[in-house]
Amino acid sequence: MSLIPFQKSKVVPISINYKIHTTLDVLRLDEIHPVVSGNKWFKLKKYLQDALDKNKKAILTYGGPYSNHIVATAATSHYYNIKSIGIIRGEKPKFLTHTLQHALSYNMELHFIDRRDFKEKCIPKTALDPEDIYFIIEGGYGINGMLGAMEILQQVDRNVYTHILAAVGTGTMLSGLIAAALPGQQVIGIPILKDYSLEQNIKALLPHEKQNFELIYDYHFGGYAKKSPELIQFMNNFYEQTEIPTDFVYTGKLFYAVNDLLTKGFFQKNSKVLVIHSGGLQGNLSLPKGTLIF
Ligand SMILES: *Cc1c(COP(=O)(O)O)cnc(C)c1O
Image 1: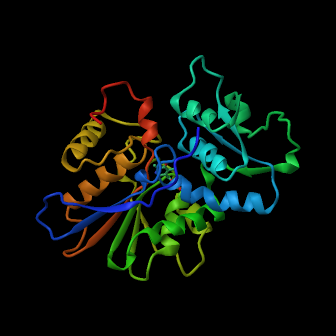
Image 2: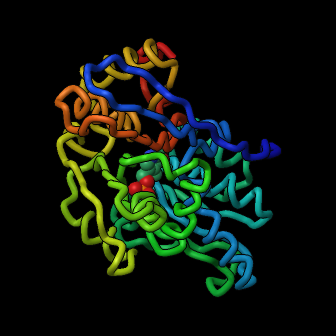
């Protein structure tokens, strides 16, 4: 499969009618590429460049069978013309998920390992010398991920915003947004899982003078990839109102949070809020047909 070139993302204003004078813009990173939808392209590019600089012959990373990170690593490696190896948690299923089918179509070599070996980050035998392999940890957490994510804000005129909001998994993207934000801008992360070490993990990627941010832990819906009928209902309503599709792991929770914060009057009058739509729509393919209206 050839890679469709990455598109420049666009910013769309959305107006949800609230009494307060708040402007809400959405940076549609979900539109940069149909498969590598979203932030993963930004998070991965510096790793890929580093691997090529170091003359590595392959990229190796880890993930589950629905992982946005796996499919994005496959596609981005394909784009940079370097082999990719995906270590997948669990036994090889009879039918591969859409995610893994996409990864295969980008020539990723897949290895299935059981949960215990996965936890230990065991590496199965490959045809390559481990010296020639460039490792990216699960989720792409790290300095190179942060540096790549800084480029996200180059897509917008960032001067106009008072607040920047994004979903948080490992916190790598958020750390890039914090590093690239202007003084006085408030960067707010919505963790999609209950992991109270996130704050430390984010700070670890940032210089001391750039550590101004807030995490709001009220919207994880019970944990990673956990959902409720209320969340699904919200995602459908949000799509009806804005024509913006969201995913149930990350951006559904993010926009739910934005909506709730607006309703509660969290933002002061005349705030200008930029919400990062970080993509991840391919993950919705794991939901039963008909769950979502888009
Ligand atoms: C991976 C991902 C995130 C989280 O990014 P982190 O850098 O791990 O915090 C957010 N949104 C989407 C759609 C993702 O795929």
